[in-house]
Length: 211
Length: 211
Image (cartoon, rainbow over all chains, first blue to last red; front, side, top):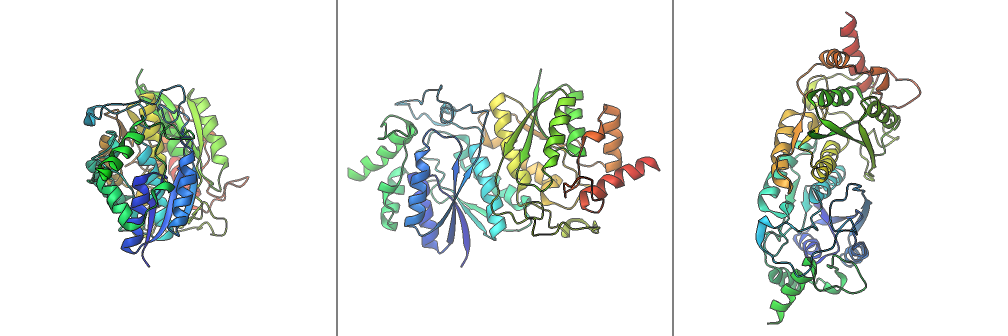
């Protein structure tokens, strides 16, 4: 059975990505990060999701002492009801090189277990404008994968890159994803705040579903 | 004063690299990793080196639970008196995607503090054949740097890439590097073993210095 590493955050997109990888026939090993994020509770959701998908899940703790993000520094306010005005408006929730760090660990894990695929639920349609969610970033990272390791042929797979949130939810439902097992809100409180980017993109997807 | 992040291992090459960055006029912030390596004592050397260079030094702990390297797994023997037969003979001391992980953190750190340079003492002449020490790897990583972050213009600088160990030592001496403050041996015992790749490359450099 072919193996894949799946970057699992506990959010909707990575949940659907995990189920896509399973559907295609991969034996999946999930990788989740405790990186000092405010919404640490997403880790609990990631573990539950992995369990529901009968997948292994490794939680790695990494420290980014330089912070410089509203997701890591409680003194920076999480932006609320923000306009999604594309790539020139990267919000304060951006974490410097976060996906680069996550993908590097995923590459290491993949090579160590002999997996030829690394799945990530990145999306460049209904997103916050983060540079490390864009197609050209993934194209270049795939070039790097070719040169970085002893094991050849490891690829990043981004099945959701060009999908709307609505389509992601539709696909997830088809694949049997239980969205109650996912967490999006950046604030990580007892209930979703409804006004951060993550909440609003989530509800955008679901509203379209209902209409 | 322009800023740089320097990946500092405690070995000779990164020590010389740090002093090069200082010489060029960078305000340096060193980044050292405690990644479960056998030769953990190199971290102490890195700290001493940073102090000698009047540079800040941050030590990050990262865990690679999948190991798959003689540097991380004490059940795998460190190869001794190995032939350096080039790129098709990557030794068991190779750590999956290690430099990719280190550079990702360095990129995050650089972006957070507004540094436009990341220095790494990679060498593709007197080296063990690791894929993440080769010029094409760094070329591609620099392409990734362009696309990965909000802050534009961050570059990887590899001043030692094409130098022999002999030349690295010569240059280091000229810059005032105290090589007694560096540690190379992979085994990390009380004295260098003299037979691992790191010891042999080090002594190769110094022997040529004496001749």
